[in-house]
Each structure stands twice: as C-alpha cells, then as structure tokens.
Picture: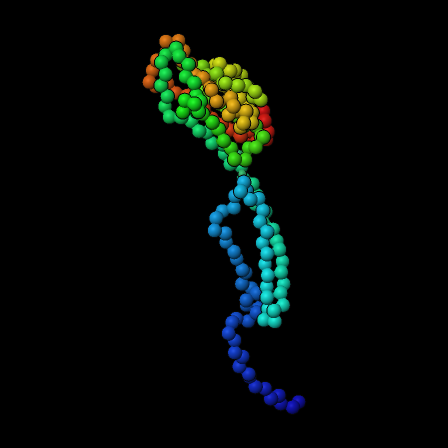
Length: 186
Ligand SMILES: [Ca+2]
Ligand SMILES: [Ca+2]
C-alpha cells in the first residue's frame, strides 16, 4: 500500500462549531409572572435568518394555566354603637363590608359571619342559600352565593347587640371561602 500524504490545515473559527451551538438551548425569561386573569395565552414568533438571508419562522403559543386566587374581604376598622341600637354597615356611612374574588365569576362562594352577643341581618337574601343551619337575623349567618349577591346582601348589613349588652370587647368574625375549591356549591 502506498503511503498516504496528509497535512493538517488549520481552521479559523470565530465561533464554536455548529454542533456546540446547537446544544446550547436558548432561553427566554419574562420580566413579570404571567397572570391568567390579565392574559391567558401568549403567541411567540421565532425567526432564524442565515448568512444568505434565508429564514425559518415558527409561531407557538404559551398557554397560561389558571390558578385559583383566594377571596379577599374588605372590612372596616373597629366600630362603636350604643346598646339596643342597630349598627348599619354601608358605603354611605363609610363602614362597608365587601368581598372580592378575581376569578370566582359566577361560581358560589361561602360567607360565614359570626358575632357574639347579638344578631346580624343581611340587607338582602336574593340569590343566597343559608347553610350550616344558620338564618338571617341570628348570631351566625352563613350563606353561599355569587360575589355579586353577597355584596348586595352586605350593603346595609345590620348588627344589633343582645338587649342591654355593652362591652368594648365584642367582636365579629367573617370568613369567605370559594366553594369551587371544594368541588362546587353546597
Ligand atoms: Ca386565577
Ligand atoms: Ca378564587
């Protein structure tokens, strides 16, 4: 066999070989966290152009998965009222109660209002279902309904202490829970 004459030709490279570059996965990060309630999907267009101006373009979609946000209650600071007198909660008197839930929509939420030494009376019961054996005009008012119906009921909510009850330590407790998280309205 004849000897093989070979010589090494140095290759000048200004960047890593393509096989190296291809292994470097490109990444993109967003400046802020995606918020489903703001935008539920994004369209991303990727275009590659080579030295000869040939291009390849592809559009893909990023779908944002919804995450259930908890309800938020807005309640006034501590209130004072004379004994045997109704205390009314409303925006007109600057002490309104309200609930919000950015993603409840028409789903039911549960509102639990409990007070010691008195009774609570919702201004409206339209669209609400009383649960846990409670009733309007008692010390425990637990209802399920839409955020809208609950807020209508809270606009004008009245508290009245037990006759002759007076104390600076009375308290009311309110809890809002989204029923959807438990699989649907009760
Ligand atoms: Ca959400
Ligand atoms: Ca929610």
